[in-house]
Length: 389
Image 1 (spheres, rainbow, N blue to C red):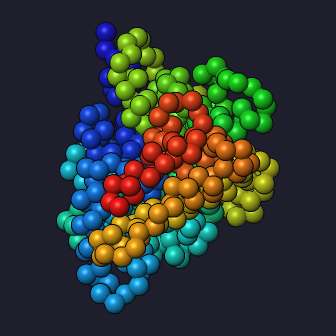
Image 2: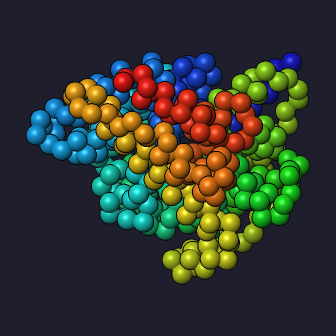
Image 3: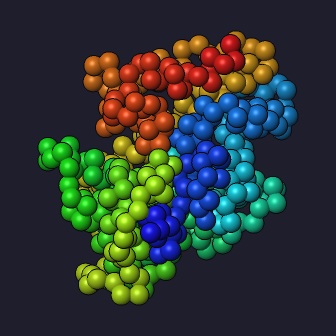
């Protein structure tokens, strides 16, 4: 019998949610998605240090020998995102998603400018804009930026999407793709209700994506739905038939090693009944988001987490630049990262406290106990630093 992954791939486009090029080669997905959090995780792998060093040197040359280190790092951050995207596109036949700086999430014009810069860097590398999706947080400002970018011929992937209002606004803006976060929705409901688990069909994240999918297909929107941020394979199974699903390497591996019958749960040609079509404006968007505590909290938390991942990646790039150029290296990055994330000061970091991406948390949580101790962070994030001292 075919594996669950093989069966899933026959009805859904499977996307690798990782910046690890070796993992992408292993699972051969059509598309791949990345962001600074995933690049931060990949940057701990010695095999990729050459790519980072090459980019830092090129950025220094571009900015100039007298430019401050922070200017070089700022330039290198965009370049590295495109460098990893370029390497990914050597492996996958489809598209790569590259994220706009999350710190620009509430600035429409700055988001548009950054997107055009990223597309320009890809163009300079000989990669057509049709192979790139620009990832933008699903704030109202981000959605409006995506609406303009789509008119400019730049395709967008709206991320950090938790609420129905965000999904409707994205569809009406004509964005190419949305990435509703299944697992983070589940996290919020488990914490708020005290429940340890939900059966697959009742999983709040699954319910949310199913509702969005059926709404889109019922009303003929062309925006694709890509479920993201999964906690377990049950969530993935319940969304079989979704347009796309972006899945981390460890869950891809579980699906690859599991046999059994996989039934289609979602059908674009025959969607389940959906509510009437809404006409979204800023007032309705704000009202619906205010009424949806989960979506409001998780969006804010997600932007904070992605922004923190960029801060951390910039710190590591600055450290590496200092090493390359013979300066003093930062020696306490891992400790600082731990203290920033240990919100209650109890000496460990839970998934709910972690401000970065799920992929980075999973990479650091080597023993899979759902908690990060100081030694976990030192061994993971600190590895790259220790290697160059």
